[in-house]
Image (tube, rainbow, N blue to C red; front, side, top):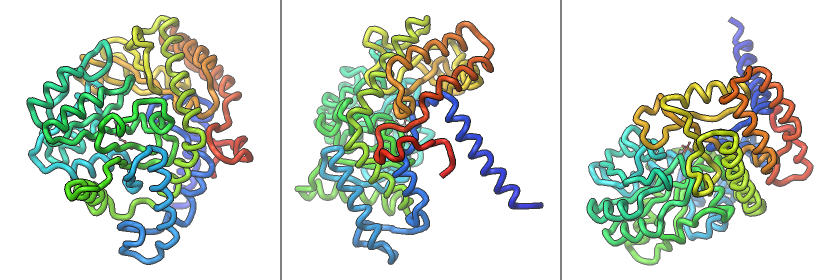
Length: 431
Ligand SMILES: Cc1ncc(COP(=O)(O)O)c(C=O)c1O
């Protein structure tokens, strides 16, 4: 066996993957592309190092320079989210969520959540993080028409159940959650409100979505690679000041939940890349988030006009980076496969009323990556036409794929990031 050939095989697949995504329409709502400066950090020497603990309090030597990086990352995160506490160590949004559950709950205690069918994420679900921690879950009622938590029902539920944590985590996240009301109810019964901003972190940092920490959330977690276009990773922020013994203990527990709770080394190269992503978002985040939302709203309108059933028409389809399409009972997977064949990358998704996550009836579409490569509203009109050709006219996918490749030629440059010189950077080539 020539093992080098096996390594070459993997490199070849990476090249092919780069090429595929450079010629397609990447529309997974949770995905994005990394800026050249962030990318540099991923191949820096930080990659090979360990730094357990916090800056200045390490279990390993050789961390003096990294300490400066982590301190800067925390400083920039606090600036971006206008808060007093930031932990940039979680290696994923899921890790951040499990750290919070570990810090603030004990097995057997109760948390209130959203149901998976109504757009929740598995990290706060029975089969995911909440199950790992042995948490008892009680679901909020949901308003299908408004695609949101039924606020009166949820407040009543929190008052009845008296959970330890009131959670808000949403993978289908079209409209802001009623955080002020939920937080008030939670605080009345001595619970904390946890806002999982995995999807909308970049919209919040760009000041174009609700501001959970100002609305009463005690802690906010998030992924650093979705609407916040940084490296794969997670983070936790809070505006608690630690000015009473109880509050100090709350923050200490949060930190302890992350390390030693759910991390050992925490991927130092990603922490360095997160710091750069925060700086880029402080510079460009507002414009980027604004355009991402405008694009999603226009895409909703254009697909509606093409004859698709788009959720929340009366509310303008969305106030985030996502829209949700109803395709037909159990038809989501078939539709996403057809689109993929034509070079449009999306995902099947449950919609309210679905019970089988493997055969859902909807598609979730996102605009974060399309916006990063420079698309504006008029491009959304053209994309809606591609959807109509694939799913309604049932044209041959191969022909549409070629048209999309042609369409993508105008969109090969990354925007909303530093380094003018890198603006022409052909992001699909290997580093
Ligand atoms: C609401 C929500 N929370 C958490 C996560 C998990 O994030 P990660 O993939 O960074 O672990 C996701 C992923 O899409 C999500 O949608």
